[in-house]
Image 1 (tube, rainbow, N blue to C red):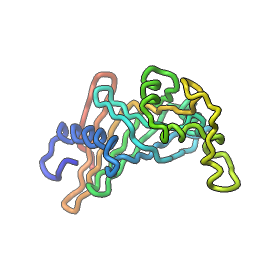
Image 2: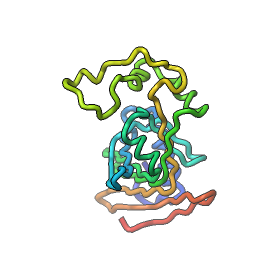
Image 3: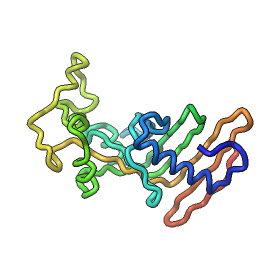
Image 4: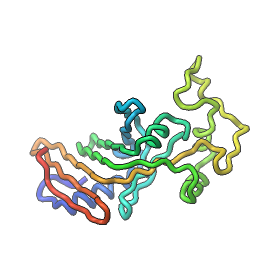
Length: 196
């Protein structure tokens, strides 16, 4: 992340998108694991951790993968408002993003992503039980349904595409914390400093 000092808002913004894009293929990046917060059916907050899979600065989008039967899919389908929280302990940088998350289970991009998954990754999306189903013993969840048609909609693979509206960046340091905000509304971008 951008070093402490006289770093500009433009440099910080470029660095945010760069480190998040790098996290999609760097298994050791603290930003690879992201917490997704959504709104439950009763209006309460729900948070879970996902792996950041794709970053597109041009469209201000982040992509994560999930099982289409998961509760988060139902929540995001009912209410797309969501937040993401990234934290890298090494750099002591927190990135919060707010926006809208949509679930993609049938687009050309979905087919492309699904076809790029390894056999081991595909097995995550064809368990017999839906995520959250009570089971008697832990390894019962590992059972795959081999009868699932792996073409198109027969697989429980879904993408969560998060459209960024706001990024709140916080750098924690003994020499002084810094905080900035970046807003993406329509085709306009605004940026400014905030009190940490």
